Amino acid sequence: LINRKLDDCECIVHSVASLLPKKEKYTDDDPFSGLIGYDRSLRDAVEKGRAAVLYPHGLHVLLTGASGVGKTFFAE
Image (cartoon, rainbow, N blue to C red; front, side, top):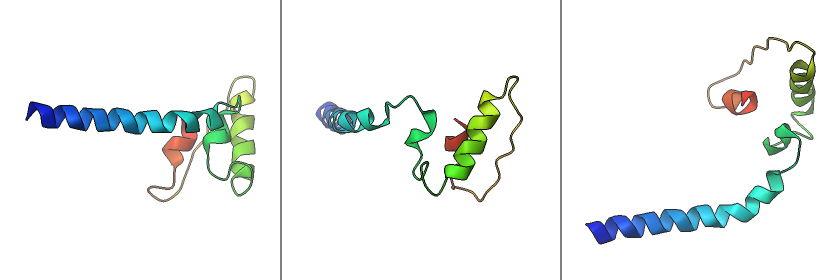
């Protein structure tokens, strides 16, 4: 049982290690660059989000959409 758990942990470490090179792709200064479609289909939403964040005292924003479309990811 202990060896089995250790093998599982090693697999997870290998999985994380394989993701590290991909992380460099998202190290841009733009926090929205991690969103799929931030430069095309989500451009309007990203520009509005950026404007709300950069407004001097910030603006309240209500994100709406179906479950699972990425509202939380966008907000983070």
